[in-house]
Length: 384
Image 1 (cartoon, rainbow, N blue to C red):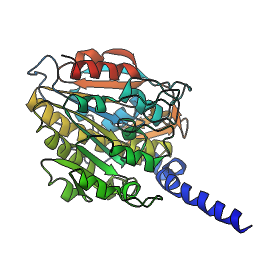
Image 2 (spheres, rainbow, N blue to C red):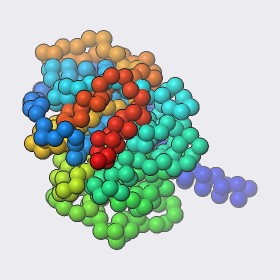
Image 3 (cartoon, rainbow, N blue to C red):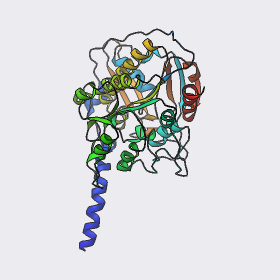
Image 4 (spheres, rainbow, N blue to C red):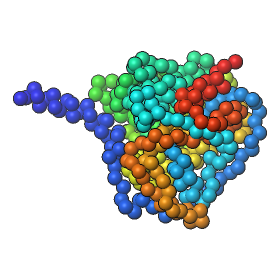
């Protein structure tokens, strides 16, 4: 009996980390959160459409997790008719189906974008037979380019993990954290500190990161002060809180990563995820969803600011899938009010938009497989 009790306690302990990280999947919104009442709009700048090269030296992939067309238009309405995203004049669509399911999850969706290979739901950086496949981030590193990941979720969560880790299960958070030490990534910023420092195996990966030359910081003010070198920026034990709590963490982290990575004369690859658009839509919480879309759009603004002045940077904005089957029932461009409804508390199978700005943007027109985005990015960034 005592042995059975010990086994039960061990199993529960193993599950606590996963439960804490994925609690948003079971979150419920209050009725008042179904309608975004509007607010003050931020100023959206228009950037020039003239670039200094035909092929990009740098590529920034920006993934709005769960962000479908309704999410985009809800954000546009909430900001009184304009988003930074509108600067991306080249537009296409991505089919998101995974290797084993018509409705993908973030792990398979992220892996397709990162590696160009369809995999099964739940798998990270491996093919449908659980064999590791190299990501665009790893390919960029091998070519001497700098690389980075930024997310509002834990940096070990499905989408960012797909660009750097190789695990059969997205829930293997501590194994995913260990995979970071097997790469030469230059910058990563997001939540997930506990998966590096408070582990079941007793290892302290923070010490290992420091031995590899990383500056390790745990708050946004310290993180944005880093200008050069390798940076591991942790902004939360697990996921970051909502915008009211984390403030402008994502736009600041995006700008910080770009500033560091752009020191490399060979170029860079950066993936930025607006992770918690998905969280808001899972719970049918229109206020949360729109807050996250607007926050993500302001991070897009930071990327556009750099790309427009640099002239050699391609920005691609897309999603790994749509969440919530979101539809818009009413709204006002004048007040920013948005009323939405949701067909599901999970993901849907609809195509998601692809927006592009910069040299090479014309390659992202039309209907594409999600794996096509990886292939086009690799060709543009790494081929001679």
